[in-house]
Image (cartoon, rainbow, N blue to C red; front, side):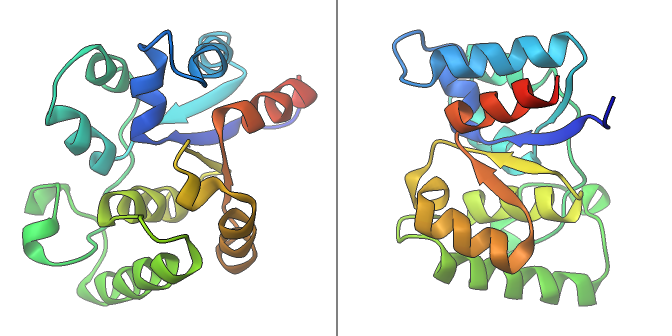
Length: 169
């Protein structure tokens, strides 16, 4: 059997997991089952946890059950979502991270914010196989293709990810 896919779920995945009327609810539930079955590894970023903590509910509870990725600083000090001792890398890494997130902002459709770019960056630095989101400014064909070609990290929606997981079983 091949190695397990290392997958990072974005904020909307956790929100949709507990919202049974969301379009990707069933797909996210299947992804969570695949994780429970040991087929895949799921992770969460501190950016995602920070977003979910703003309105604590069942989505935050689900997110807290997964390992947290190492956090790499991006943006200004005021935009950080981790304490000093939770950060990874050097000041030189922080400069590179900022360049990556600025480039990502140009490759994606307008509407993406630093939390989205920060979660992507943490997934990229953690060498994840897939970053999963329903945010169309990242997952739409054009942006996802440009981002993959530039950084090598696949961005898929929950419904796009399911067949990938099932084909590996």
